[in-house]
Structures are given as structure tokens and as C-alpha cells.
Length: 320
Figure (cartoon, rainbow, N blue to C red):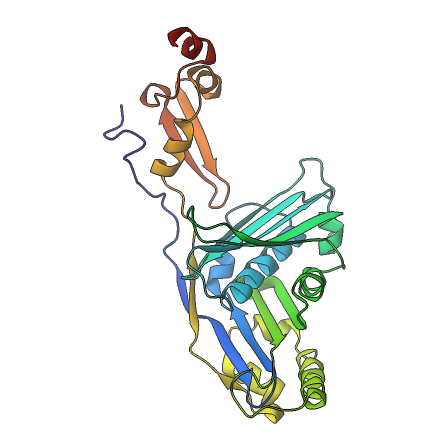
């Protein structure tokens, strides 16, 4: 028997206590209708991408999605979690990443067992046809806010820009990078949005001037390389200056990102208590029920005798 019943045991698994204080650097172009975020996961990228033995192209896709979630969530005001969920018919039928308002980041992908994944597989080749959902979940007392679009484009950046253009009617540019460097796996994102007027940071400018300023910023952003995005030595401020110095780029207070798996024995034990006795018996192997957290890949073991569960359907009917 365990010392505490599952519903009282809030024990967390031995997962990394890791945070990156300057994970997200917000920026804007004064007197221009442009704002954005530069995301650098740093060593957090290596930690998040090493929880499972994914093929390299899958790690690249997951790393890009993690950086994207961090970049998009920090542009919103919410309390809860922001998630990106993708379902497709390709070798990777499911991808889920989420980030809380405090910057706690996690993610996983499901890879088909018989998948034959080319070394240079694109996001579209991995995901196939399907949909991508962007969701803000602020708890049980508020309905989630969600936008869903079909998978369109070859890269995850293409898919995201398509979402902004069709669902949000918002001009946005997205640049994503993930890969293995000398320092380990890294992931990064540069997300840039067009805002009304000068974004509240300067005098109003005409529509034509706004359009030209956005076009100029987009051209400058397109010069960024994956090597620059993933370079730990090149500071966010230096990279942004390199890209936009002619536009007078300014940065805001950086945001912290951290390893964000929120699993616990208490939470998973509560899930088990919702099953009936017969189902629990089928789950048990040699008196143990094992539940694996998909995000951190940690096995929680519950003694079958410690999980009460619900009565079997026939027993419940007989007692009525």
C-alpha cells in the first residue's frame, strides 16, 4: 500500500526544474505598425526535445511548434493555457504543445509505428491532410477560445500565416527554426504582426505609409537565417538590431520560459478513479497499473488495490 491514496498524493515526477529567463523578447518598431516576439528556447529546447526518442525531422517539427506556442501565447492576455493542436493523416497524426501565461511550456507528438520518415521530411509530409487548432483555455468557468483551419502550406510557418490570414484577418510573418547545434537541440521563432496605426508607440500614419512600413519590415525579417535564430552566442537584442536597425527597433521586458509538464500522481489517480472495477482489472499487469505522461514520458505506477474506481455497470444497476 502507498502512504497516501492517489487522490491525495500530489507527488511530481523527477523532471527538470529548468527555466530560461530571457526566453521571449518582445519588440516593436517605433512609429511603425509592427510588433513581434523573438523566442529562444536555449537549453530548454534540448530538455523538451529529449523526453522521447523521436526521429530528427519530428524533433524539428516539435521544436518549431514549441517555439511558436511561446511566441503566440506571450502576445495574449489570459490566465490558463494556450495550445496548438494538429491532427492529420500523415506519419505524425497528432501534435500537441501548450504554454501557460507564466511561460510553462510542454509538448508531444504521436508517431505512427510503421512510419517511414525521410530525413528531410517537411511539416506537410509529416502531418498530411488535417487541421490545426489554436486554443486559449482559461479554466472551467470560461468557454475556450478556439480557431481552427485546414492544414495549408508546406511548413509550420506557412500553416500559421494561413491561419492568421483566414481566421484572424491579420497580417503576420512567422519564421521558425529547430535543429541540433554544437550546444545541443535548439528551437527559435520570430513572430511579427501588423497592428493598427503605429501600434500605440508613435503618431498615427496614413494607410499607405502603414502598408509600406509593413512591407519593409517583412522584407527585412525575411533575411533572418536559421543559424542566426539558433545561435546562443548572438543575443536577441543584437539579432533584432541586425535585422531592423534602420527602423529603430526597440525591445520590451523579456519573458521567462520553463519546463512546463504539470502531471502528478494526484491528477492521474483522479483519472483512474473514473474507471469501473472491470476496466481497472484489465489495465492491471501483475497487480500494477501504469500510466505514462505523454509530455514528460514518465511512468506513474499505481497498485491495483489502491485504486477504488467505480462499481461495474451491472453492480451499479443491481444496487438501484
